[in-house]
Image (tube, rainbow, N blue to C red; front, side):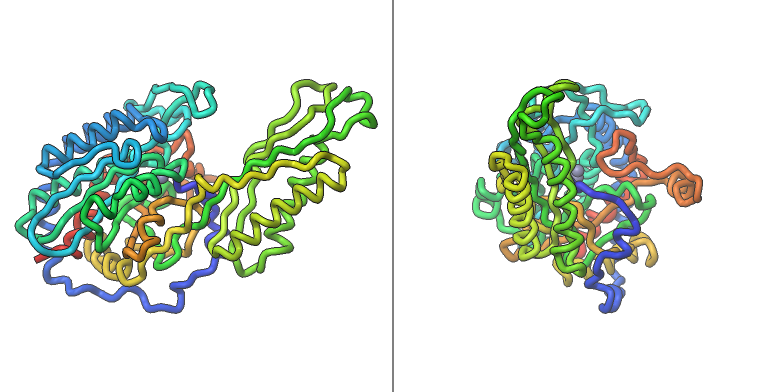
Length: 449
Ligand SMILES: [Zn+2]
Ligand SMILES: [Zn+2]
């Protein structure tokens, strides 16, 4: 999902828990150079086939919970490598297990789903897929969150690791997770026994494409990385009637306007200014015609927080403000529904695992190309894999060529499209290459002999 407002000034204002800590120490690097040379040699042999896979996945995206063909392809890829594969874990989820002697169990996660976005990138391999969305409307479908980069890097890492299995010992658990974009896939796999039916991981790793970082770089946070995400549906009620006779009605459109403005005071006036929070009304629908006052208006909100206490405070404030504004307008009580089944808890990277992994990335990418950054208010259900105490680490993979990045930095330059944009087009070859290199080296770092 990575439902992110990529506003750089926001990062600058966000708290930075890692700021006081020293940067990741240089690792014992003697194993890294020969391992990386072996990884690169294997990867060179796989690159053409991996790019074909990327173009295929990009042109054939499937929406959340409908990732049937995508999941089948991922299962087929793992089976061909000798993984023991189980399908339909938590819906369309795929779990592949590869046992290679004693040692730690490392889970590597990709997500499978795409978004209801009509692609406008103009690339030759663009998606032309159209389908019905969850609400029954026809939509274009696009891998606008880069999950095709994740899947290709994941397959590439599996191929390279199996090819280099004399260099490591332990158990790989490669999972293809459905429905990340609607925040339910990780929970569905966990509820379906991911940690009971299959070897329980000692570590969980994942990467995510980054629409604002250069090729050959990664960005990461130690500790808190991504926010709590809630969605709230509000139905504001009134009493409809003729637009020329407002005195005979209770106008839910005026009431909604008041509620939307009042909601802005939660973050600005109620939450401690040092605690990040977001309340965004992303959708408002009401009415049918110029001169009819409708009976109701529907609002859709996204709510972000980093502390559970703040989450609770904000959700209660939304309920209170909607209900009291309605009372003040002599309107019937509104319905305020927090969609608990779509709640995504914050992603908290394990600090020692992050330090240990990034120390290797600095050797692989160059010391300045693993960039620490403050947490962002995007969300990801990968965080759920860490809620039972398993150390997790997700990093963000640069996908933007230098020329496009530099152009965006000029005062009048063309800005970079954000994640989920219809124009987001990661550069395939170098993105996948860096994805496979970082993922493979992160795993080898934990499992090397
Ligand atoms: Zn996304
Ligand atoms: Zn995503």
